[in-house]
Image (cartoon, rainbow over all chains, first blue to last red; front, side, top):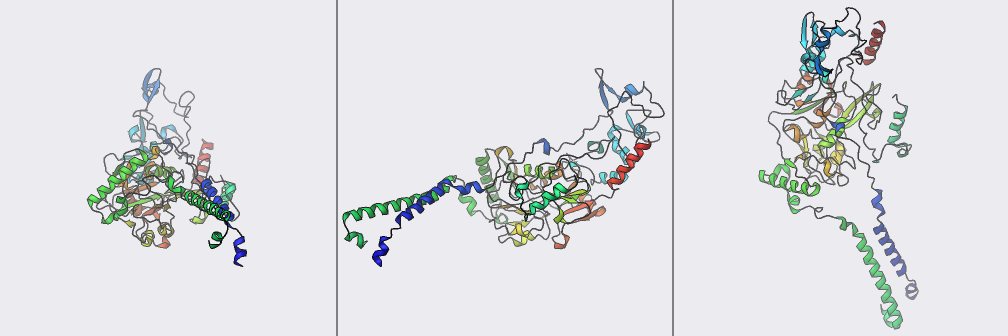
Length: 219
Length: 329
């Protein structure tokens, strides 16, 4: 029996196994199995903290005919009609979409165009436009005063230096105040670290559910 | 062996070659199996200082300074950039609280990416502390949410958005389960992690009901141009493979008086951050005057992260009024 066993030579098999191991380790096919997803494409502007609108100066200035002019420069010459707002020549870019508040002189002072009207003869400057907004949006104004509504930049300490509260018009267009929709930044990668796609989803996968809900859902 | 000795010289030569081939191929296989060691760089095994370093709470001032210097050197070696690394302590009489206005959040994900830019997270594989859940109107069931939404514009009709991040719980399950106290709560209410002490067991990740913790399964993919040099020991210094990380209310900013990155970037002002011990702060006033709720109240984690609503007219009603007015005008 011992002789017979010696005749079966297994050393070539062992050599083959070793060579196979060597090729496996050198080729290192496991390396490719680690799924590295692409880096999300987000620019510095996408995460800029700058206000989405810029405030007008006080009084608002317009560059016309080589000179900087304020509102009264024109409006003291061209008087407005008493009835409907006439915008045939100027301010045609302004689309008023402010709910019931659909008259220019609800907000703009008729007598002094460099100021805004609050109540009767009372006017405020363009710097204090939030006082005008407060006329109708009292609860929001109260929240804004307490730091609950609107953006705060700088510090969490209420009275720290360098602490800025954005004013109403730095987020809302007073003529069309609803906050605009925007494109969302890239979504997170899926658990399989790839871009979301139908190919990732199998029947049991939780990913299937969101793909279905996303395609069926109301856009 | 006795067999080969008994046989002729031919046999012994063959057995010599055979065993030689066996041995050399075996050595070759062994050597190639050790190939990954070649990829190691001098710093990969860590130096002795980081190995014998104590737990953060047991370190003296000089120990911390030494550790900061070591980390600064390490960062400079890896990213060719000298960080401004500090160890900011909790401020007296301050307890940080976050409040998020669900009526205002539009789901733009600016907070997610501002956080990534601030806190030196891995870009690939992707680690993000904030998840923005898109939820259908009329439910708070997170099972119905979707955080992979990819729309042309947000907010989508009949959906609202609920960003979730670390809630800095007062009764934090992640702190309780940590077997080595590598994560704990500091006096200003922020749960921090000593990345040098973490052993990567991920118990905390499993314990967190808000899915706030992220694990570095690989060496973080952070490139030089993305590094934020304003660093803090317990918050945004670069992490390594095999440690857990999570939102820490931007300690490197908030303990220096600034606002968290996610709060400052929010374009709608839906995010509010402040000191709850100051009764005039915005968060105290929100807790007093708004309709506030916490996520998963039933698990009794006592979060320091609150969601609230504004009371206002439904949008549909407002828009129909507008069109009516426009028609009559």
